[in-house]
Length: 119
Figure 1: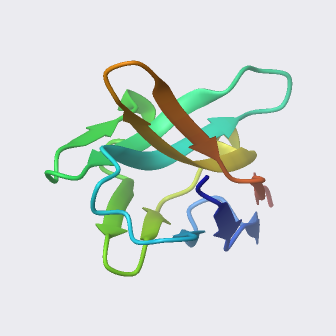
Figure 2: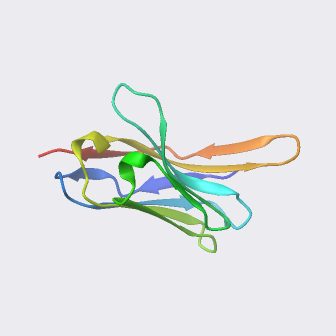
Figure 3: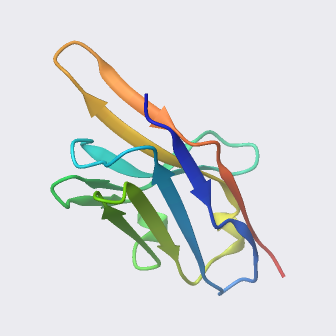
């Protein structure tokens, strides 16, 4: 229903910065929550940051003060600015869009983009 495509991943040095971008196949004004999750090696997918269509944000404690999420609903994009990266930030990062109706939940995922933080 909604296609999500991530870009911007790569290899960065500890303390460096990287900006991830997610592009949706349509405008996202009506999607309640958009954000980013990640899968560190050998671990389950975990929340990184989300933003509602009202502007509310939710960040994983480990990234507070370092990562910033932003949405552009007109363009259908959600970005993640990552600063002061640490090796433990290494993971596959997934864009997510979540919404619901009275009878069903809509949960969309991108294909993932690899972020590796290493010297």
